[in-house]
Image 1 (tube, rainbow, N blue to C red):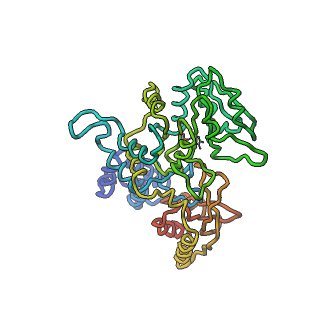
Image 2: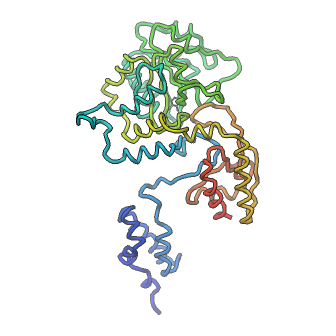
Image 3: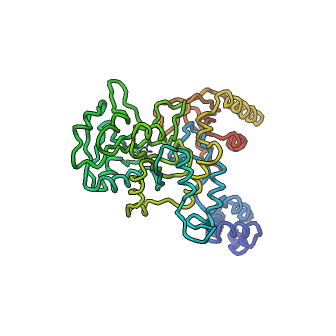
Length: 429
Ligand SMILES: *Cc1c(COP(=O)(O)O)cnc(C)c1O
């Protein structure tokens, strides 16, 4: 009897296949060799026929050299932290690709001298918020707060309301972050009520600044009172306002969401925000405010450790100057239009013998902000068993399980991905 294992094609034979060789050129030889050796093992274990090895290798090759896989966000949560928060606009993606090579991020092409890093992104941010005397960009909002604490309150006190001691997620807490700089937190007021007078009583020679934090992932309702930015701006120390989501101007659909322009107009000395929540850009921390304060932040030694990559600068500038972002499009999605898309998707599924139903749904802004705000949306409802298979598909589609149904909410799915969704569901059918 011949040993069937001898029929398994050798690694060099598989690698010599032109399609595999082409993949090795883009993915790297080592990565492709790993796929080959895993496939050979499956053949040795009798899981696949020796003659199917080449085919299985080709099917098993990843789409790219990174293990991160694209996901269709059908969760109905627009800014989903676990799915990488804001998806970038096509303009921002193009900018990232262009900046990925060598680029003039810190170079003046006119005279060949050194230029200020990321000036295009900073100019775009300043233009987007004309009320800011100065702007700066760091790694994320947490880094922006860290830099404020390091610069304005080393060994001193930060006065903050007990109602605004926020845990951002994954166990990270803003009070711990601030305390890690050596600053001391001076908590004032109570969980549900804090007045300007509470802050005023706590302010003394040791105060570095007053911090107001937007409760972006929870709500305190009922018998409540909070000090306004305008009220706190009257105090004799700098007021730093962490608005969280990165709205630069008020948005009519999110009346309770603070924005940078209004906070500055109301007297905040500095505003901090994330770039990858409602702003719809890359992960970044935005700092906007009084020119002299921003300059101090920029010159702090730690600023270098918090600075952003050229890819971030490129994506941020394109987000600020470019077309409407996917996040904003999702936020403003028209429910009737979503319904029309859902009907079309269900019709296509019916043609493949799959019974999807169009159902009304409620989307959310997500960890990015606006807790409790429900956005009218529409979903394609499938039996719950689809959820796992869709998640494991290529591309992965992540929906929401509600009462034994797998809902594919279309709010955060760009229309150009509808065909992908149909195809992904069909493959699971
Ligand atoms: C999200 C958030 C943060 C953390 O922002 P990152 O950009 O993730 O560091 C801080 N404060 C508030 C109010 C937030 O909403």
